[in-house]
Image 1 (cartoon, protein in one colour):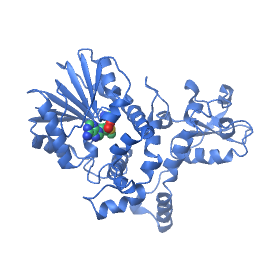
Image 2: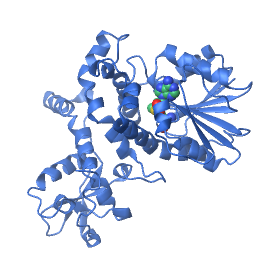
Image 3: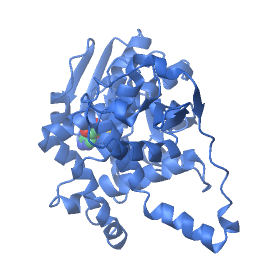
Image 4: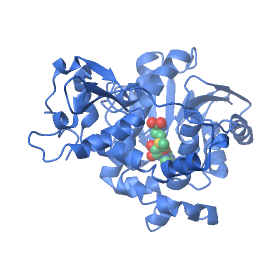
Length: 383
Ligand SMILES: C[S@@+](CC[C@H](N)C(=O)[O-])C[C@H]1O[C@@H](n2cnc3c(N)ncnc32)[C@H](O)[C@@H]1O
């Protein structure tokens, strides 16, 4: 079923009456204080954790977030209301929604006199609904990460440990073809990747542009290295009119699928060979997927393409020094393992200090990190 399949669901704003959101669960005991039964329970949860992203993927494939959101109504709907009339067993969908409510994606509502549970989107769930002009959202990112080609790599994760310098699990699962080359060969996968990047980039770019005062001052030509669809460049240029020319630089197959954007020139190439020159370079979520040696090579090519005093503005996840159970730390560490599995075993999330050292090795003279968003940091390198 495609993602619009549920758009005709029986949406009713009158269902807002008599709603009782369920109580959040009681706080869990700290891991060190767990009794053996509590510990077994915690392990049972970890053992079946795959149900969470797969249930999320399923409801997105079924078009549930858009149907519940319904242009902003977000009125709680039951599984039966979300499915076509006469569906033989709505309880199957209800079980997915219950699990996702326990994970904070949906709020669950019990209404007076109604037997069925009803679901609306929480703030977390709303990230699955487009908020920017592209129509992409975090739903596209979830779909990208759980398409068959990427999922196939995960059972081979232990092979990354045994052979860290060998092909990453994705390449092992695809007869040696790495992920970026795979997207280049598969039009559908390439489009899913482009949308996923746009869906995640749009809200981050708003935060960046709100907080990064003077960051693009004096820049008339800005090059986005690994710019994907050009969505980041388009957003920067809309907010910073002094940038007259944008160069969206990515692999030839990627820019071939990118939309036309006023003021933006799409250039296909290989950043390991040469990068188009400009007053400044923007580069988001590129370094993380490569090894230290590859990052140094990319940073050197950026250095070559910049004028004296020119700036490279890189936006990357920066891994915290301490390990804790916060959402931020978990999101960053999970992404680190995603990179290990999909892109490069020795591609990785790095600390601020590691990013500073990479820049110095490539010849940059100054570095600073700005934390304008909990996931991506802004890393400024000056030539
Ligand atoms: C994780 S994506 C980030 C996309 C975009 N910057 C964003 O944040 O939305 C990494 C990008 O690097 C591009 N890329 C990979 N290898 C490249 C190469 N050798 N030369 C240029 N771009 C490359 C990919 O095609 C992809 O668009």
